[in-house]
Image (tube, rainbow, N blue to C red; front, side, top):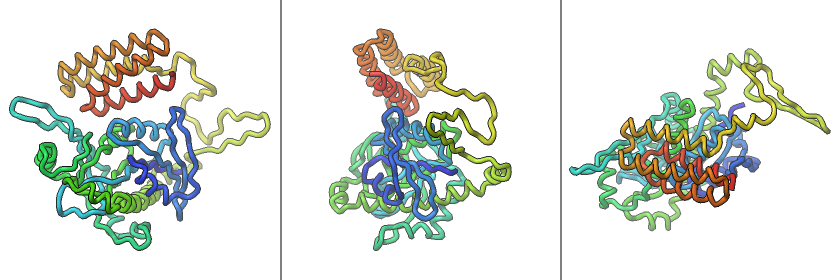
Length: 382
């Protein structure tokens, strides 16, 4: 059965999507993250809804967690953003054709040189979104009495700064370097990175314009543009989720599986003292029942070793400079030594070192997300 994951950064964005779900129920991840599982009114599409918080780094971690937990057919990131150009209206919906991780750069004597990471929307997902826009069928999901906003397709810039000025050095640099970006926000790069690393899972970013990123944010927030923009984005995203599910069901591969009697899930029922080991229509490869051997568990120490390898590759690819590489190696060594003590105090020291490391690697979203995952693993053991 098709499952779509929808993620948001803010609670008001979460509530805007949740309003479209029927009978939502809490699903607790083993690491403490709370998702809600529900169905969309009308077609009953299964949706897993999650909150990632602010910033690209936590969004990458929670996105990875959601993908691993639910194995979705597609993933949508929904919320609000600031407009970068005067022609974009408050409440407009922006569908990202690609996402810039705009903080990637190198500082040289003659100025700051951009080294962005970019992720494009999948062609099929883009085509479905544009068809949805042309037919205007998504507007049925708008709040009663709400006007129909414009829908725009274009790049979105994602960084680690709340931009609320039209004249600051940061604002000028963004507009000069990423002058085709329609909107700016703080999470999409992390989500896009996680989706890309999961076999290029179909992913779309849908943002409602809640301010103009020009110093007037306090005024527009006071006029309740955030919830209005979030509701507009949620309406389009929910309609897009429904269309993506239909496309998945009509895909030749899905039809072939159905013709062979293969389904995406099986239901196990055990009563009294009975236990079901595994029930499946068709199995390829090995099956293990019970907990994996302890030797197979991936703990913080093993993840640190993997981080060393990733850091070395990033250095070779010139994503990390020599000074940062050396400093990062030192913090990894401190964390590894502290973990080897196998005490609560040692684990606390390791977390402090890893926080410093995450700051050093903030410009490399993939590495920073890996560090966040190690911190979460250590905290789970505290």
